[in-house]
Length: 240
Image (cartoon, rainbow, N blue to C red; front, side, top):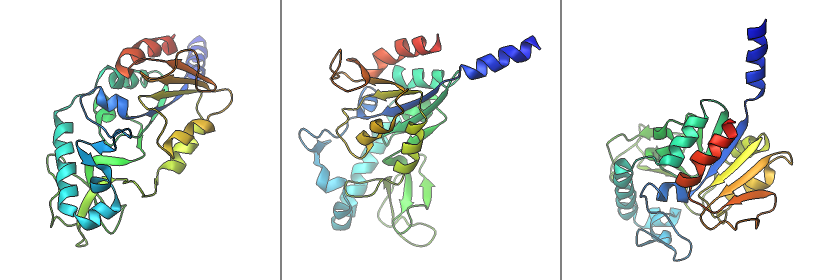
């Protein structure tokens, strides 16, 4: 009976941790990301590589751009922040909602990852967003078709397109006991609006090098640091 009691106590102490991760986590692994300040992504105008209009106008340039990003991703490795979140999952219920299109969370060992803006390592049918194809070591070329004969495109949510995963993301945030906002400036919507859905009893923490120490975001503890530096220490605290 004593063993049963201890097991129940252990289960009751399991926290529901929701993580909203952004471009800063990928940047710490060497992946360059879009910055709103100059409107460029790897020296390309976002309008030329990350919009439906760009795809209609010049699909070859769009495909080449994402093929290059995919090659960079294959050479990148998860950093200490990614690994710390994966380790926390061994003891608590951890759900990651990421704005990033890379697979570094998964490669670090995280098992519950919701991609708001798509996944770079998948292609999808131009005609059917639900028709996905894992790319592995392959890239996408003009003339690569889905099973129904339509051109394959990157499985990425471009500017101007709907974010299908927002409803599920909102549901997860509404159940959070701890909300970690990591590596994001909270300037990109609709993702940034998710923080307003956290319960009033939820502990909320914002980790970002530009986070104002001691305040600046209502209801949040602010840690002005990179995720690779701050997360291992913070998650040790959550374990205790």
